[in-house]
Image 1: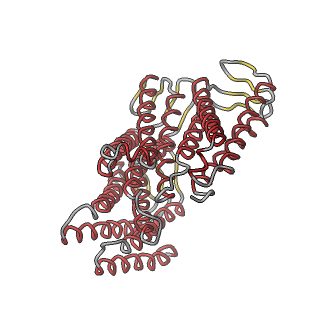
Image 2: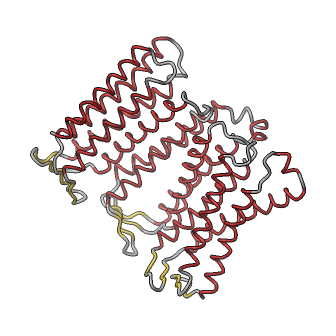
Image 3: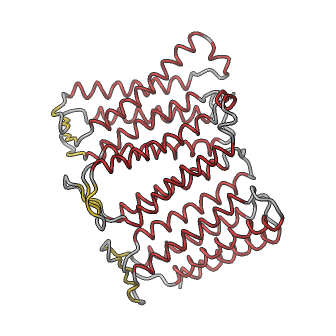
Length: 454
């Protein structure tokens, strides 16, 4: 195995990031005061920062000098250093958990206050860096079939873990506009289940790439079973994201902190996106890198982004004033987001089922569905760009200028055209559909410049 594999590069990048965080902590060590703990001597803060820097340096060095073959790990010295590397990564993870648990607002002389959310988030991401390092080191001699999908899949699962930890760390009595007060333990439970789901996904991404686990649990961790598990876990997260976005309002936390509705909706929509991406990436994890992989990767990613935009529009749906047209009801706004979400999900479903169902006509239908959905989305983007005007959304009490509406429609057209070009070049799409999809993509891209200048 090549000494500088994708895992080595990722492992070294994580080590460098840990070093960077240690340097940042060292630079603000003077005069830090943690609420609930009190003043911390500069030497104590500096010592904590130095040990974080040392851990990052050690992890990076071990990745640089790791043996280039599995046989090299069998020597006594290699085993000792491997155990020390595991220990260093575990320490980083534990320190992240400690920061999440005791995190409170920090005041730094010359900088000002650092909110509790940022402190908890820093601890959660430190924990995630630790577990990603552990996974990479554990699988350092197992070559991934597709390093892009393998890396993205584990990162998506790790992000869910991080977000779950963050919610647990900042759980307090909260008032959500339109819903009312939610107790702290309810928020904590929501974060805990998100943490558990993310951890289960992360374990799956780790076990199926580890040769011993594959041989030991081949029946339990078969492709079919693991895909079903990932569909269920990702579906739960995605459904929670849609429901939360639909109900989301401005959040007012009892200690005086406030988050406007658009930020809350964006957070819920990205939660939906992470849940949606998990089974999609799992579906293509066995496809090797190459020309045939590109359309199978880009098409579902773009459809997921379009679905994310649909959820975001649903969350922001409100009575809206459009310049030159007048006021539209919140139900009209919501229908626009819902149909974008439905079209993207139908396209993704056809992508998932195309190679699973048998029969000539079934395959033709599954090949045609994404083309139809993407062409409809592209035409809607052209319509949005053509009718672009200044808008004002009453719920968030903010307006968007015409140019942003224009860009929003244009990106829908461009994304749909790219997805069409990729989809018709995937395996199993009939020649007539290839020509139709290519013609549709070229048509909307040729029309777009004229729409933008009108």
